[in-house]
Length: 352
Figure (spheres, rainbow, N blue to C red):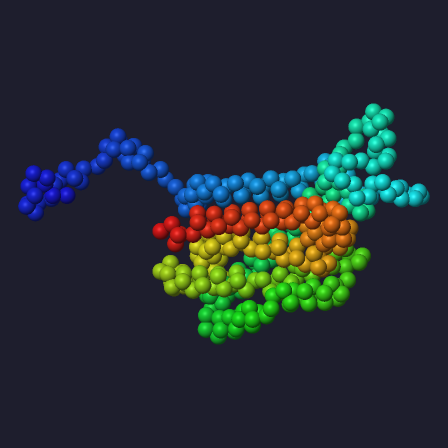
């Protein structure tokens, strides 16, 4: 701001305060285009090739699990060797990949086109490929909705504990500590067994979902919200002393309004990251429970129940265990890598 040719002068250079010309304004605007936190995060996420490939893989698996059951010629519960009023045709049972039953071979010899069984059939003559696809849909749906339940409960309780503080925070955190001290898998198995016996959904709109799936959602709602609650509580505690929160309180704003309008929007990046990392955990838990027979009700498949059913013929049909195991690994690994990419892209502390 001082005179360039008079370095020891204390007089200000009036030329430094002249308004910028249009050309200078255009040059400055081109140097750094306007952006937002979300746009910057998406730009960093796209540059992360591992996270981008994982996201594309998740989208492809999800779209395939939704669309294929509508266009595939076989149904997940269709027993190909069963005809009403006739004895069962065992030639459709335990078919190897890309092989056909006796009636299908006759149709092929007659010149008809028969859609192949890509993964063969199971012990009941059901097309195994569509069962894997449908099982992927069930596992993804359970993981997604369970994560939404965990998000809602954890977000509510964590916000109340962090904003209220004092005795409210103390009581909630002691409850969280008690739940943390419980052996997760043992409690999940016990609750799933008990709730599966207690819940009666016959004759209701929930009958198709099944008591086991409903009990699984209840288990997630009872046990898995604690991590989300502690995370949100920590964020609220660090934000509630900010000036804009104190200003809102000084104007008479209620706690609910402050949480909804000021605190939670500033925690949104942490919420998104935590939810993305919670989905693979929910999918793995569902697969584990289904493997033990506490998941979806037969004949509806899930990846865990398919792996459990494959144990009966593991020596003869090993691929029936390998295929759902690979799908579970792909889904969980892709979601974890994508969650790590979201954390690297949207966590302001890592990008400071």
